[in-house]
Amino acid sequence: MRIDVLTLFPEMFAGYVGQSLLKLAIQRGLVDVRLHNIRDWSSDKHQSVDDRPFGGGPGMVMMAPTVVECVEAVQTGNDETYDEEHRRVEPGHLVMLTPQGRRLDQRVVEELSTQRRLVLLCGRYEGFDERIRMVLAPDEISVGDYVLNGGEVAAMTVIDAVIRLVPGVLGDDESAHCDSFSSGNRLLEHEQYTRPREYRGLEVPEVLLSGNHEEIARWRAERSRQRTAERRPDLLSD
Ligand code: JBK
Image (tube, rainbow, N blue to C red; front, side):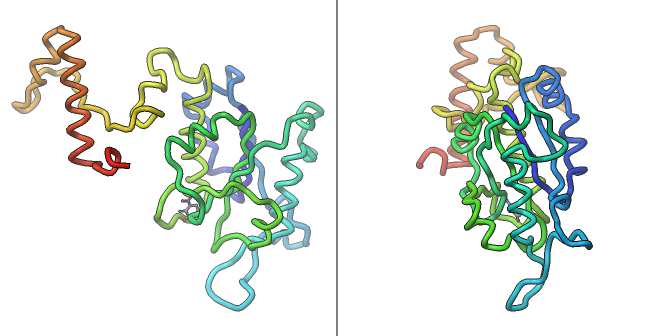
């Protein structure tokens, strides 16, 4: 999967892109992440990317020409940093990270993971000039109802969730289809224990030490159901 990120702060992604799972996936050629600085497409001498809102009010708004031209250049491979191969890549599915988008959940993650190319548009400041939406008609996605300083962390959330579903990225050991929240599983995980068997007087449940795999599976399924009922009853009802 090819992922392009359009941001004013590409350096925010450096540590994340270098983390082990993604780094391995990139090395294996399964995922190709490209960072683009939106500022490179500003046309005036001050390299401005935002301006004060018409009508007044606090903050700054991302300007339409800069953002639209950046997206179009990246989608068509019309970017001087690109070679011929990149020009042949399809435009991809354009995602705008915004609190006004549809809420990201595992169903949306699964849907995004079927794309061969994602183009993730991150904004800062008070938001985007509305004409960016009108011209580009992006798939607007929100990672949650809280205020972030920009779409960058939201974009990393999308990348993190999506790449786990790209075939070959996870080893057999950690395969994604038995995760809680994968399609057909909307339960929280049961509790887990590892060594030591006793810690501050707290013992590992006997059943987990029994070696009886059938009984262990039954106990875990019951704990999953109970945890979900206690903590996230909404998952059981809708
Ligand atoms: C939020 O994706 N989001 O949820 C998001 C993106 C940009 C700014 C924000 O405040 N919540």
